[in-house]
Image (cartoon, rainbow, N blue to C red; front, side, top):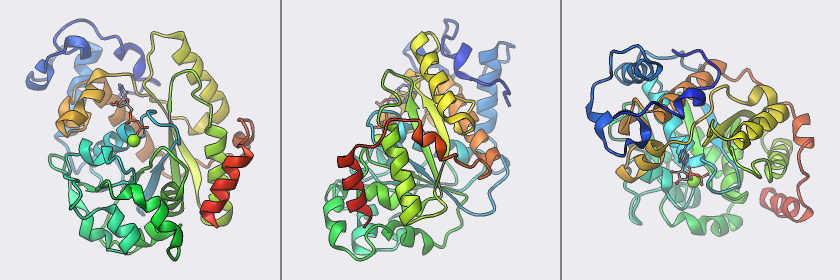
Length: 345
Ligand SMILES: Nc1ncnc2c1ncn2[C@@H]1O[C@H](COP(=O)(O)OP(=O)(O)O)[C@@H](O)[C@H]1O
Ligand SMILES: [Mg+2]
């Protein structure tokens, strides 16, 4: 496995040829991994090997790790990260469940899971107390990977939950009653901090925040971190930010490295060494109902998610979040704090 700190570096700018991301054709999916000694050739081989090695991979956690992928900003890579990390962890040998908690259902789409209005979904679990096992579906093509899909019904759940008993802990209860053995549960949150996200934060112990390497990357993060503090204080003492992942990293721009430096100086140990490069393959995969791991296993995007998953698996739950970091970031506004507190009362 690669040991260099940042897979995004040389791999965002691959040499021209049929295996590059900008080649535009699907050549790389059909072509066997090259046996040459270039970094890309070796990397591709590594990914393909990992793909063929389900069941043998990394150490499995003693207990199910529930990881909440959250950031109230849209378009930062939450869904992309959820599905590709989940697929990577499954390919590394884990049993992994993705819970789609966004009414858009993008994670369900990306995993090739049917989620039209009649499909039993996470809405039924949250609002009608249906068992999670009724809605979980196996993901085609990736052994050990499962998905609880979201349908458009979920858009109403934010309001319907308000009047229900234990409205903040309905997802947690559903997970606790789920009897199938799992190594990881990854929850894909909507781009807001309402009751759906609160349910995720109550259900999980770990928060993974994807940060897009763009201007304003840190804006709003203070608010998210304060919300994590609020949920930890009121509802879930074990909750902590365990992981920050830099996404859509373009090693050619100075801005990306400046953002990365800033994020690392704020968060230090929580930031994964691996960052995810901006990659056409990553953005194409969902339209085929696939993760990048099956769509183009040799691409830099696939490799970076495999490596990020490896880091997460090896770190276990040892990395504790230092709450002081939150206070160095912009303060949560009075209004947002108020609406959040309403959500968790
Ligand atoms: N590393 C990446 N390279 C290129 N495009 C990406 C990458 N990560 C995400 N995208 C694209 O950016 C958009 C937003 O990503 P998404 O995961 O849906 O964000 P969120 O769930 O936070 O709203 C999508 O179109 C997705 O395909
Ligand atoms: Mg999303």
